[in-house]
Image (cartoon, rainbow, N blue to C red; front, side):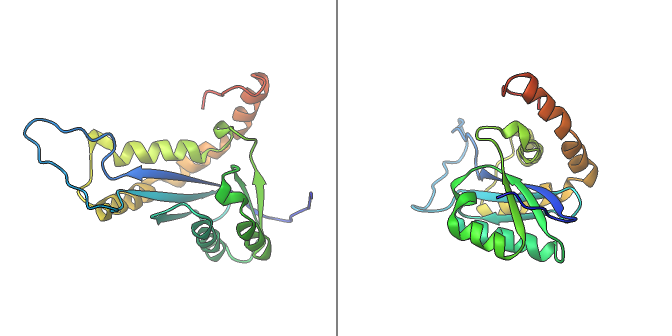
Length: 187
């Protein structure tokens, strides 16, 4: 159902999973890494990039509907008083009934992106910037807490100008996707 929302905060949501040791290879004369059975070696980052509100990041050990509920609750707390319109993909955690019900109750309106269209969500580009920062110079992390700290530091180093530039690229993204009959853009 199409509804009118007055003076909303506009933003984008996406998740990214980062590994403690991405593509780790054993090199001669380096210590062997022994992981504990069942130990967590990755983190999922939930990110909200707002055009005219407060950005939000949450780090979780999983990517489930309950995590998404915590995340949209955090977004609402950081962006009180105004409705929020969020563009996001059709991931299962985004379309889960309990997530949609809560979003409606707290005046968050989801706008679902066209399937398989990461070019139309600038959060995908933001993840690229953050991942390059976190793993610069082939950096790897000894423990999951070090990775968590690196994620938060990388997120905090992103300035609002970078976010605005990504968002301002949306008209060009849409134009390219339309001109290429739904094909990939240069973003």
